[in-house]
Image (tube, rainbow, N blue to C red; front, side, top):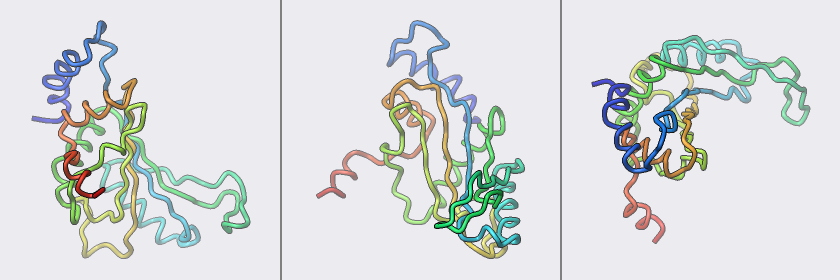
Length: 187
């Protein structure tokens, strides 16, 4: 069963029951997933930028946009118009397929993965997570990678509170850490 069907058939009724929404349109939903990679020091290296674009294209199934600097900043050695990042926004069916792959394939492939902290959900119910290496994704073959780079994923929702967002992501199958694990780490 796809993640979109899980949301419609299982998550929506549980959200409606827990938070007692009066209107169906008030139930939180995932609106978009944004994947971005900062280029940083490699802004002059065209091959590196090309590799990042190809990697993000393979991961998302959609060609990303290379973002350019709006202003020159001499302390960072950035000139106006220099490439500074690569970004792609997924919506609809592609977004649900990406989230399904993220939850069921990518998270289990991350080295030393013990779950994600619920602190990565902001007070508006949006989730932001960073990956140190792109090789956690199944589309990226380790033998074809020339240089490792990280990437950040932002998942935007219509949730009004952090509690709604965390509950919805848990119902969608995102592997959050148990509270007991966090208490052990703090001790």
